[in-house]
Image (tube, rainbow, N blue to C red; front, side, top):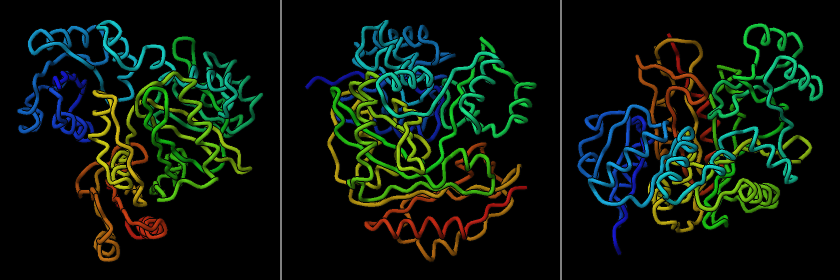
Length: 408
């Protein structure tokens, strides 16, 4: 078999992204090159030595510059067979670059279906799939009209957001007026307005090859990320039950699979967020055509005993995936402090390790003096794995009861 020359676009050498790059570089039959904005010297030495080539550009989100860099790598190291990247914000520019280069992969139309959340929901709605009522508002008048027709609360988010960034809830007419006075949407900067879905939030992660879903995973959010963002004292948890084959998940299996087809995906990994309303009905929130973030790839790997950091690039390069058995329950607690400033103290870690150390499979404990990024992930995390879901549930519950992060 002739080795394939794969190009991985990595704007910045973040630890989570480099796990995918390192795994891709070790895949049999792959000669890996990297395009980045960071200089090659910032790569770990062993990874740098394992690469076939590297090309630095000043903007990895500019498809014309990605095209030029890919052609340079092809001229120096031989023809390029595939071009890919793991970040949400890269999916449309990479699709445009692939189109210009005549390379296979996610098309421009499909990439836009996933990236533009208003376009996505319009397509899902047209296909009769359950999703939140929504409207792209380009003026204060349009925002008021939607809030009036939909009722409050209303969720405001960017049309091409990721990870709940710049997402917030408007609960009352007074809050709506205050927002419109300071940051009203415009034709040049529209916002996506959605009904506020109440109930339990989950994810539906999947692998699709040639238009067929081969594998899926379901994760339970405890609580919804928006609730975490609104309440700084909450430490977020995610649970992957071992058994996800029950009838309670049949509706999302049907709707999720159909949604991916409607959006045009042929081959790839997806991360879908969805709600089960208080009346039992479901609604799809949004879908991304890339591996999940926030330690989800690790959680799925632990639950299935398969390294998805290697499985995803193998899927990108060879259109291959070995369907695993779900052998364990897994869960993550994200350790988060209230307030601002660096971490001043961390309490309860020793006690937690004594009680659950045997089922901790990964962790990053908050570091005194370290910073806490904005968002729901906090300044650290701990991941548990056990064959019994109830044991993981107990460990997550005790974590949020026991660990306390103090910020200065």
